[in-house]
Image (cartoon, rainbow, N blue to C red; front, side, top):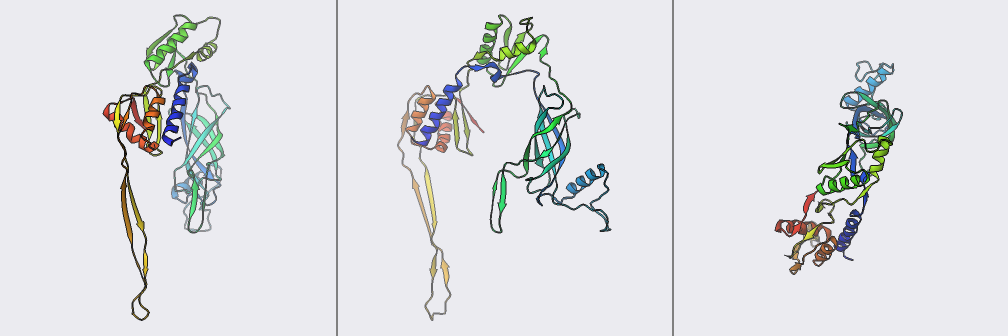
Length: 368
């Protein structure tokens, strides 16, 4: 099967799966129950010579040692004094997200990113770092071994690297010290916020809730559904939210084509349709070949051996015929119509853009 048809066939299967019944909890969030971002400045130690020797890093290491009761400095006219000079350290920004119901003593994941000229954080350990919120309050403290999920190996003439070496992750690396509770109800109402706002989906969610709790839900806008309390005086608020979250609806999906030109990826949604259109697509191939030749002088000619360049340049343009695309009402129809052109996924990007400009593609085209 050609790559273009295979790719769009998979999209058709994905679109069919997306049209199935889904739980309300999977497409909404309860307003007030959101996470909060934390940030801190820390020091990573134990690097194998891949850290930084910048003044900023050395000064932070000296300050941390002084807090632990050791006197040291980074400059001194007397070499006998305690001076810190190390390439095993790096200053990092530490970030995390604390959930609304995270309790004291629970652990959360943290990410670290180098701020100095360290080459790699591989094998490093983050020292005790406080993590603050926007209110400048300390909500967690982080410490632990860093995992960078990659490697870097080099020799005298070449090297190989996988993934970024100056960022890392610590699973369960921070412990919550202060809770950040959320506020579930406002004015005696619960509000469910849609992750993908849509008028029809909000209407369907309100309809499903009203079928279980008559007259309680109202779609206030495409991004939210209000639910009046109390729904059932015999149940707690947590029970009611859990029960509503298990109700199933069939969300409406906006017609959209998502394009990533860096990777040549094309993703088409369920409701993408085509009007009849005629398309001709061809590529221009340029080929440049270098075939240098060695010019050898006569034995007694007094000349010198020289390399003479020889360049061959060629251009080939495909002569593709014009193909009439019929009306297509499903993603499978779109796949079959575009496959008639025999194009690659990267060619599909150009074709989708052209069809959108011509008014034949009835969907939003979004580039990422």
